[in-house]
Image 1 (tube, rainbow, N blue to C red):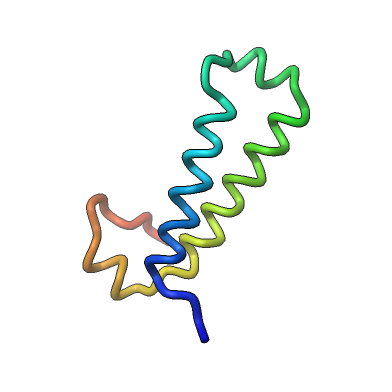
Image 2: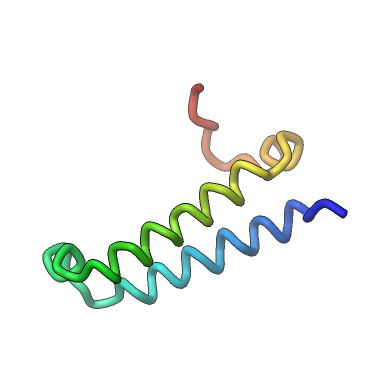
Length: 71
């Protein structure tokens, strides 16, 4: 059974919150000096992007707050 749009949105929110938590109190210089942190944040952004790409067009249209990017 396919995952629901809300499950995907939950994955996006969870990954965003985790990235925010990892970056809390860190400067860009500190982040760039920590390869593990860079890789973790990169992976979390991948999770957000993958989940976002699987949200149905109907759900996006219904919950659109900002214009969709032009392809």
